[in-house]
Length: 321
Ligand SMILES: Cc1cc2nc3c(=O)[nH]c(=O)nc-3n(C[C@H](O)[C@H](O)[C@H](O)COP(=O)(O)O)c2cc1C
Image 1 (cartoon, rainbow, N blue to C red):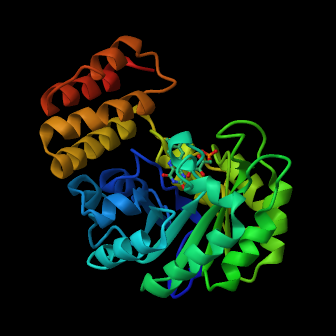
Image 2: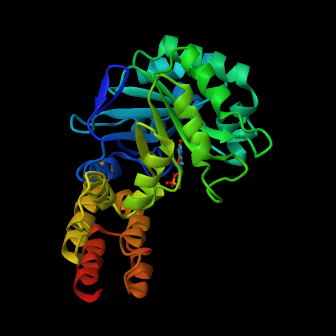
């Protein structure tokens, strides 16, 4: 059991904030296989401050979508304060601040991973967030900006000093993006330097790799990101593996099809049919990864109605192996 502030998390396996992916349907599917804490997509504090309709929808949740972390991105303390005021009208358990996003359009505006280059500003922004969030605050960092400026321990200590309740660290630099080796030893150094819980991220792609991430870093938990795309079973399989289980909890094609249908139904209920089906197209490809179903995947990328998509899922179940 991990506690972040007053929030107890039953499993050390956390579903990552993923832009364009970690919506309510995706979170619910992953929760059903045992994720202990889930995050929203990264939410721009400016869009939130402007009450953009699309952004407000990212804060939609439900009673069983808990514990829930909301992740915000920002670089201006006044805008962040305003965004927090608006967020306070919604229900969630943890507020996470993103100082890790490597995208050029983000760092060029002094946000996300850029803040690793401005430790003092980073700390000031976090202080504002801790004072105004109304829930425990966490922060997500990377190991550093690039290999010549690794400063994760300094950033982590600065965060802890202003009252942050937990820290997430992706063990890659901004320059690495999402490729290259994860620096397990840097995550470990951060863990050893802090009193608050530290949760590790980076290449948590299989139960074995999640265990390695936990063992090599000594962290309180692990973030699962790309490993959960089309594979919510990673939470069940990893949970068993961590308990020392050897049984395989891999899904068969019937369970895959059942889960896909459930995911599609949740999407349609959340977004409406047209948009729900469009949003599901990419998930069809991920669920069908590894299956001999190229033609079906192409058709799924053009499917326009719920009925059409359900038919393709049935075909996948009966024809793939
Ligand atoms: C498509 C995609 C979107 C992501 N969006 C976010 C995000 O909004 N906020 C964030 O903190 N990290 C984001 N990440 C990073 C992940 O949370 C995670 O730290 C990273 O992918 C490393 O984990 P992995 O190697 O196990 O995938 C994203 C990753 C991917 C692949």
